[in-house]
Length: 498
Image (cartoon, rainbow, N blue to C red):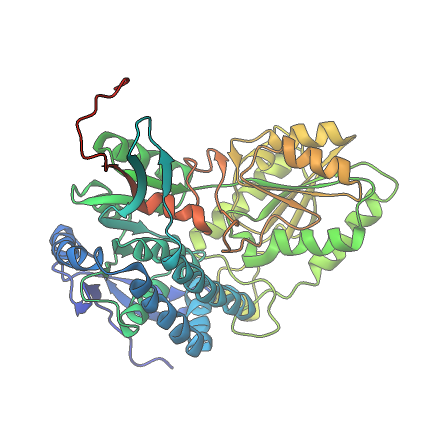
């Protein structure tokens, strides 16, 4: 029986400090709603102004710290994270619900991200160019921008903040992080460990709060960069505000991702990919496989039967159980929203092959559990084929040929991740060219982003504003260019063209 509950404080410029509001919100385990994980401050404008003041002072030191020296902090943070990997994974599972194996993978993503961007400390390259005049050189360099407001999501409460923090810090910026109120602890630990690694005072703050507090961050005139992972609706409002204030803004928003399965697909690979893509993290990824666009063939029915029988055997439960394959949804209200999609799909003519129910009984009564659900006979313009569900619900859309499959895949407002399973390399490459998405997978599910140099993460259309996280292109959000003209002629010159 739980007797003590931790009351957290903000990390304000490196120091733990109570919120000026003196008010708190509570966070419960989504797999066990009787377990109160902690109380967290509801930050306000005064807290934000104080964090900004600390960040301003720190920026004037950190920006002039050589990038390889900044990298040493990230290297040490990677080692600390590795040493605490199991503890951090347990925290993540308790607050976000995902199976412990997935949580360990997410903490490894933090380690890999730190190591990659630490390496970029020796590769923040600029450009050199040829001048129109003799005895003159042109050099373009990258420089930091200032204070970065980072607003993170709950479904990857460790990895996503690291995708924002690491490129921001290595570029010489300072950061203020607002974790999601639905998963506040992982972001807190992230910044705590950066200070353990030697990050100078003031370079990072963690301020807890609601969406309204996030709006204060977006609107603060001294915060020069905003990076947010969230819904398309919220992203549009943030983009509008940043546009009026001429702030740099990075948006990672919704998705309605699909796997195309052609008649020559490797069925074993396809089965594994659909199951992991649709039901990993209980479908609560912006890259989750929400649609299976399957070409009608001699094996379609038998494949769907095998898919259903395998999905029905997935173990749904508390993520701390090593055998669990599908965890809970983040809140009861979100579970109800997901169930609403299922009910409306049935009314539109969809046929539920498995699942479609709120799980009850035994340990399921304590959490926000929902059955892995597969619904077929979905038409391309039905709600389930077009709207983001963010839960373990897979829409099966039969098509006749490759061209129809491509049209259906692109027939949504989002453009994050699309996949095709086929043995025909010509069709695979045509799909890669025709897909309206920022990420394409061939013979793999729609999930599984990496953080390496070329592995840029982001989407097209209403998935974002063209910015990227992960990989070297993430530095574009957190740096600004300066072009330097050097005249070494020692005499007066007149340019022929201004």
